[in-house]
Image (tube, rainbow, N blue to C red; front, side, top):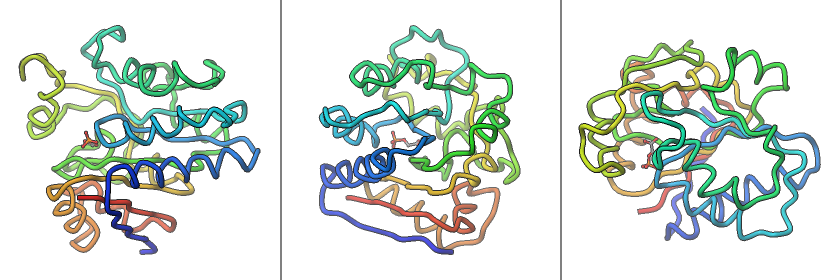
Length: 226
Ligand code: PGA
């Protein structure tokens, strides 16, 4: 394992540092393929990126990690909508370079064909999921439709009027897809996330804790704040 764990003292700092990793990639000027997450944690990071009006997105393609499949794309909680609201509507990115797993038949093949993911930003679920790879997802999994774990449905109920409205299925990048990313940055906030990070990074590498596969990644950084 070659993981770097950085605890920072505020969510603002975490957001700045995560955005900085993305900016560094973009500013190199080469074509860059980013794997991007949704959820509460990356919102500050997206704000930082939006606030940098100098950032030139011409060389960037984005590949979102996942999307619900039982709600319309126009639903405020669809991940496509989340991304438009928090990032894409505010930056000068070519809309043809924005990709979601439900839009492409062979997401993995497409990503490979474009040279693979250069940097993937991940959150982590309280059950150890990354993207929507729930406990017991195969380590060799590719992009596919999955049933959401009960814990995930409970955790995501805060975004909906009631738990009954939370979709029970999603399409997600697989663990194999994510592990092929040249660099991974996992961002997490709160004590509950620290517990699962510790289990994932120092416990057994097991499909019961999908994030534990990250122990095998060669270029992983974990950014954490309380
Ligand atoms: P969060 O979600 O950023 O809203 O905590 C992370 C995740 O479930 O992957």
